[in-house]
Length: 120
Image (cartoon, rainbow, N blue to C red):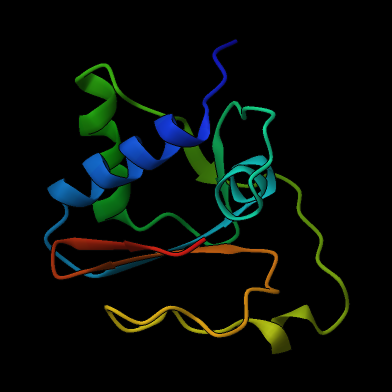
């Protein structure tokens, strides 16, 4: 089974972003969040999301995959978070701003106006 490094995940998300024409938000969890946000060195086999993958994002992901550069992308089959964790979630930052608190377990992927703002 193919495993993806941080560089491959970032390249995939940027390529996916270049195909999007509307704003979309993905809350990335699992191994991809550990690799993207926390610098985990072990590669991951997919990108699990906490939320449903918007149709525009899935269509763009399928197009990137058809070009031979895809990474499996889907909501996590099983996921648990600590009690009241959603109280710590923050909306994606506005373009050009980095979040002051990096304690969230989820790595935010904010697509805004055809430009990506990947926050780790």
